[in-house]
Length: 383
Image 1: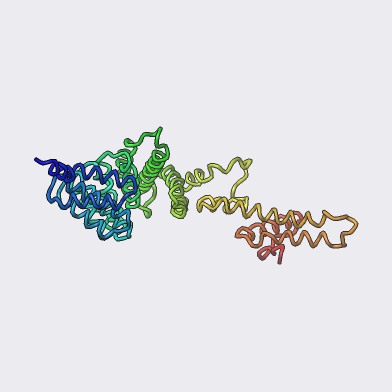
Image 2 (image 1 turned 90 degrees about the vertical axis):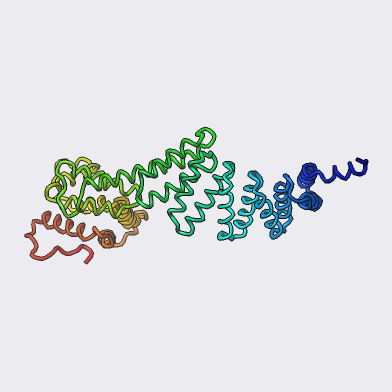
């Protein structure tokens, strides 16, 4: 072979051309790299055709020629090469995702899966899961998420486990969510990925809460039937106190009301409802006008709001009473004290418990003055 023939053979070596093109691309010489990749493709069906086609696709995409880049990806895919074929399909899918063309990205991701290369299965299944979830195909999404977790990929497995568990919890399948989350937690190195671990651990805890809610509800049985006198009060309290942890406060109120309305367990339920009320010095709760208000607020989950109202009223009344005495006492006008007291007494009127306070005031006033029992409802102090 002549010297010129040897040189020509060297310049047409597909492996050498690909290496030179890669080096040029890494140095920012995209145009020159593309020309070399195209020379390899022009040689026909060589073992390096898929590699050159993928390299050309990446270079063209970086240069903004997305249409030609996708054509090059399809050339690489058509070779069936087990390494560069799925990588080209992966790149093709990303170009469609970037353009918001999800309906065209899905077939490319499925092509990645069809190649069966373990290195690319996890991200492809995860992408297909999210596309199916966005399209409302719950079964298809679940299947892809499970496939991701099954790969045991430490990068893609945990987010797939989290997303699938969220959907399972939404559909009332906490036990299945627990299995998925436990598998996802095994894939995480807690020392290097503490936030990812915490995210799945919290989701696992939530799944146990949902499972507990289901169990407590089952223990109470049919709402129209009397509760079991032995476990009914306990189940009522546990269910009512757990529901708010899942943002279901209104349901918790219904659970308390159901227990309080059941003659067989009402006393025990009320005792559990009042567990944190403290010592009332032996006073009969029925004699205290605010007891029903507090009980109602606890069962409805509105105790903080009630406390805010009470402190707001006290703050307002204190301000009304105190401001008049901050000035020089010599400047007080006759009758001013009576006026300020009257305005302070009117403050609770805007609250739901205001009428009860007014009735209590009227009754205490009657007893203090030794007046006979009123024959009509007591007058409101602000009337």
